[in-house]
Amino acid sequence: QPIFATPPASSRIETLYDIKNDLHNICESKSCLDIDNTLQGLVSHAPESFYVIDQSIQQLKNITILLINIKDENRSNHQNMIHDKLLDLKALSTFLVKPRFYLNINITKSQQNLNINWYTSPIISTECTGKVGLGCETSTRMLIDITHDDKRDDIYAIKQYEYWEESRATLELYHHMTCLELSHEALKVSIENSNSEETNIDVKIQHILSQLEKRLYLTKGSDLRGRTSADVAFNLALSGVTNSNQIFDSLVTIAIHELRRVGSRRSFKV
Image (tube, rainbow, N blue to C red; front, top):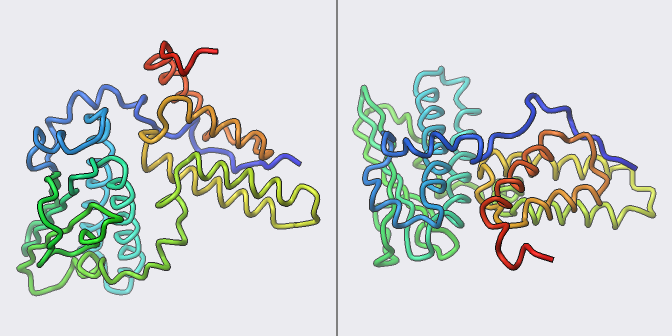
């Protein structure tokens, strides 16, 4: 039984291959404190990794500015959005930042200005006194440093990040599962329920597709190297997924460019 995904708003999700021209303008980033040294702490291809992280930093700043300017009764949703964006950045740090480096985020808030900057730095010590976040744990490589001299605690949501309930992170599979792992999960659900009368299989696969879309939006395909994008598309097809042009078109775009990039390697030849 085919699983029909929600019709996409656009032809496909934006990937790194749609913004190649912007990769040449990373030196214009106003968020990175030290671009040259930061690139040394990012996995190859470093400019692509830089762009993906910098975009999320910009989104975090925009959401935080909105939080500062809205009324108290509407702040809860924006606080949740900030937490989600911090979890996005934490997820990116696990595979775009080199193992022996930290992703450092500096947040400076005064009465009139908000600055959010970032850079990478070598891990010298496991101490993180005065830092907010989960940087002391081996499972993440992200530290948040806050300077705040305003009487009104507008960035309370960010300060509370280290106390954020871990259960919330488990609700979003895309934070800790790759596109390939999510496609395997969809295939697993399809196989396990192929001979049963399970009525929620469509709902389960739709949820996985939604998580996969979020992963693509977050990573822009930066974790789909080599033949991985083709493997994801194949797993989804076997799962009965159809009419999901937004996902499939994005995967095809990534696969074509990966063939051009590494198609001559022995692992790509039959």
